[in-house]
Image 1 (tube, helix red, strand yellow):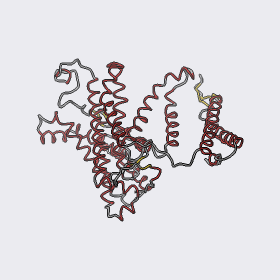
Image 2 (cartoon, helix red, strand yellow; image 1 turned 180 degrees about the vertical axis):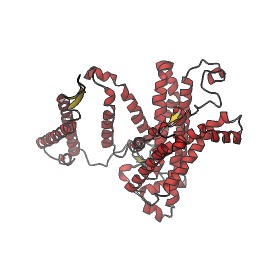
Image 3 (cartoon, one colour; image 1 turned 90 degrees about the vertical axis):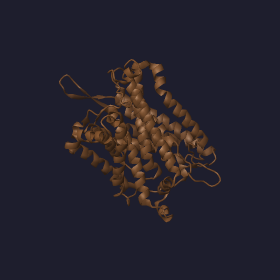
Image 4 (cartoon, helix red, strand yellow; image 1 turned 45 degrees about the vertical axis):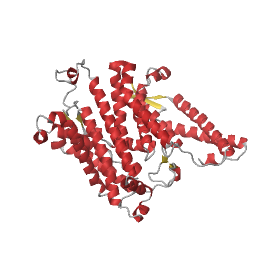
Length: 474
């Protein structure tokens, strides 16, 4: 980046030389990174031995692309720095009116999404688009909004958020499958009502249990900040996963919990029986009904998460979260109780993670520790950071881009027409996605939507760019 800075205000030949030098260094770095991952390919011969197949043409193509791209970028940045007037770092500003309009349009699109997919690809093809794309994206939108309370609003770096996701999933699985618990709940609310309200009772209980574990995590880390807080939360997530693996008598270890009841429409199961949903309404049975019901269920839970978060931001507890995020010392000097502020953020964020976990359990019908590894926490945190910490709309956009984008990249069969039938696109989809992530973070280091709209303002509400705000390490 030092080379780019020196291109401002210099002669054109010197600028060309500096751009060529920078591009050449980038090409050499590409060659170094591509060896031996891209340059050599291992294949198995008829003697069951691995042999190396050179692919130096791929390396040189990648180096040429980097050279040309870097050359043009340096030239463009040098020209704009030399000619343009100094200005502050730009950010993606969205006014309150535009944000409300986008919210209304987005809600209309979400409500019409199943109907649109049905009309476009039919009943058979729409199951994949509603389930793998719609439901999967909404789960991560809900998880991103839950973690946004902890990271984006309170400024507490949490690398173990998947632990609350796991607690919610296993809480619902055990409540729904453990016979003593089922008998107790049936006696409590009546055996005739338990089949109708089993899911709707287990869902809030799973959220409450996750909030309890969020408070347990919050107490030991009250005095920790920054990197130390991240390490402890990472350890907490691994502890929960190891407990799920080793507490075999309760969690069944690696085998997981199976036979989790599928959700019903207030007692009407989505099956082909005479008491099922289709028979009750006089419809022809299809598994699509359950998929559409699950879609609108997770949409309702995600909207509930968003609504509660927006309401909390306007309350004193929400303003205390934002004060803690900006500067904990100043927060203490104002008389704000940082203990309760941190605990409420952990508890409420964990509760929404638990609700998402309970939905995941009933959707899959099976849970195991392998579904709650550290990579899940990393993905959720990446969604929050990419979207813009504290931005509800930004987190939703980032979840659609990250989760929906990776699913769409599975459908890259057209690349075989370019690189040959031996090319396997699924092996490179994460590489393409990682490159896109790097480019976006270079373009928007503070996230896609890096503005902050104050909850309390004097005379006029003004959006503040995240580049102009110093974040603390609460």
